[in-house]
Image (cartoon, rainbow, N blue to C red; front, side):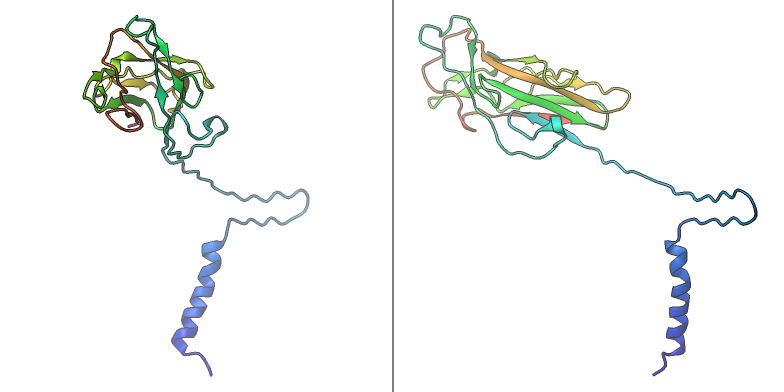
Length: 210
């Protein structure tokens, strides 16, 4: 059975259009002597904006792995009876680096990055006594990148913003080892303050990029 005239006409038109849609440039040269034929190809690379923040356990950004990791670390301080309230800083335990220390890193490719830390309020014990987050200090020391990532000063609530200024490339790469200590400048009531996401224990670090 012969195809209807309309269908044959459409198939013919489509067959003519296909080479035009798929064809790259071609050039033919003819003649004697040295011949040079030329063709051109255009390229485009589209890079999305990314913003990576790591505090504690996380993906291995130093090898280019920027991935989600839901692990949350616990930093604990347990001064002895002789230490309580002496003003001598108490080292922590836990953290992905141990000894109350965490890996902190930011990578972004859209300009300046702003970092802050937010707590719900002072650390509480089961009886309602409190220890202010200002008693927990954070020291930043060099890690993998040349740009040191400063640590927000913990508060009962939101910290002041820290701005990491992007270089001319607009790419921010900053990291640090954040070591937490307990300032131990007063004598609180006996008890366990905070814990694993209880009694205001959790601090939220937030990085933003315009």
